[in-house]
Image 1 (spheres, helix red, strand yellow):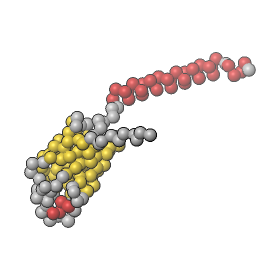
Image 2: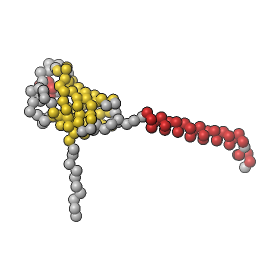
Image 3: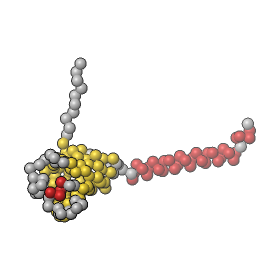
Image 4: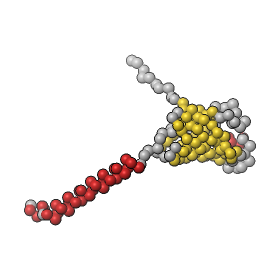
Amino acid sequence: MKEHFNLKSLTFYGVMIGSVLVIFKTITAYGENYLKAPSSVAGNYRINARALPECFDQETLNLNLEQSGIYLFGNLSTNEQKIILDGKINGEQVFLSGKADRIAQCQITNKNPGIEIKGRAQEKTFIGAIRWNANPQGINFTGTLETLPTQSEPEH
């Protein structure tokens, strides 16, 4: 039994346990100070734009965003079609892109119609610009976050 508790073994294990605790504490402090989760931008935004082209005119546009960390998945939906988008959030900036056959009706002659949305979410609004191949300068828009009605539990 005496052989198991010699001074060298106890010193070695004490130093190893102490080192692990110091490393753990250092990594925890770094994570708390420098690794911040991005703000949530997920939700359904009703888009209000003043200068929508005729192919979107008189239609309700919704930007639906789902978020997993910094990665975004979403769709821009009209009454008739959903345009699938994916992208990232970097700080407060949101960047989404996708392909849209519907945009082809907006006078795009390119066989590969692409669409981009850049913007940022603030409180319950999304402010950004929609841009595609035929309209490289983009159209500014504001989206308002729609709150979903809460379902009450049925009474028995």
